[in-house]
Length: 377
Ligand SMILES: Nc1nc2c(ncn2[C@@H]2O[C@H](COP(=O)(O)OP(=O)(O)OP(=O)(O)O)[C@@H](O)[C@H]2O)c(=O)[nH]1
Ligand SMILES: [Mg+2]
Image (cartoon, rainbow, N blue to C red; front, side, top):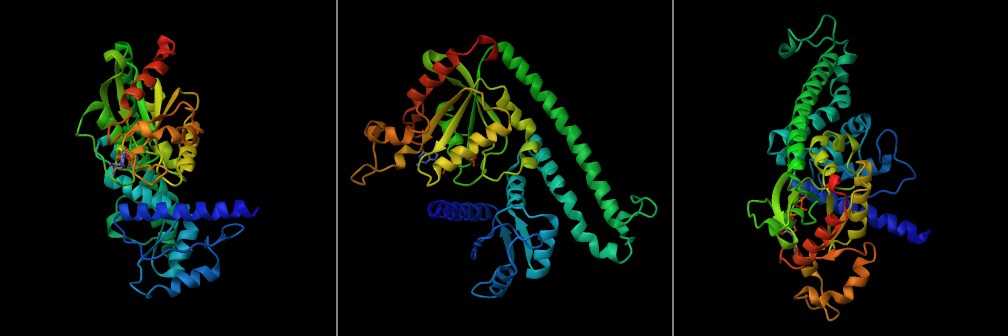
């Protein structure tokens, strides 16, 4: 039991580390953090009353803070109650991720999907914002809303209707994008070039590997979460010059809300047509196993658990040998192989940055492709 709870605590704390990285990526400066152990979240405020007071008391301590971010999804009423109690803006993990996605989306498809996810997140939360108007008896007579609102409609009803209409509009636009993508995929299929899709936890090194395998320096790489949002496909060559298409896309993260995954369906459908999923794992991350598991769970949610998989254990250049010296080549890693590869015996050790192990990886991919019936490639 003891060990379990220690593990839980470590997990919660590691998850907060990740939340801090997300906050930094979104442009915030982290002033402090708090952790509370509860049997179940408080229905009204998620954390307990005492903890709310404690956080409130830190409001003007040291540098103070003007934003509080919770590591789990808050219900719309919890978010509102917390804002009322703390007198600052309160966000949850989902809102933070949405914010980063909005910053990162470059293509029309990416933007549409982010806006859909944002609108769906906003819809149930409109109530909190306008409840004071409802209490005052409805019709607020906002000038901007004139002409849109039906007779006797309250502001919140109008807002909800507008957001719902926008959601419908976005969905139909995304549907067009999906059809377009499906056309491209059929064309590719006819050409008979198999698709290898990169999957993995955010920041695992997928884009770096894409760069290394394509020698394309335009691929965007950054030491930040969700550097890549829009899918990108490039031609690569496996063994004996055999061509394949390599697709890079959005990374996964723990506690990724299903609504967000659903909004990214058009992008993630690319994975469904891949002949092989190339799972990139950052072996140097303290929670590499947990991250790997999150990726597997997300793939299961997407119905992709049966896709052939090749696992690449990346960033091995960061490992140190028994004497604490940095390793200089893959050859020195034999002693690690057993422990690293235990969870994925077929895994290939690579360093995307140093271009180590790429021949091995190409060979492994070619082998897996070889084993598949021609129709499914
Ligand atoms: N030391 C080392 N660093 C690496 C290696 N591969 C990637 N990195 C670094 O890891 C960071 C993330 O790399 P990306 O390629 O952007 O990771 P990604 O999986 O595409 O991340 P997202 O697009 O954010 O999901 C960058 O700072 C890379 O330079 C590697 O083999 N060794
Ligand atoms: Mg990337």
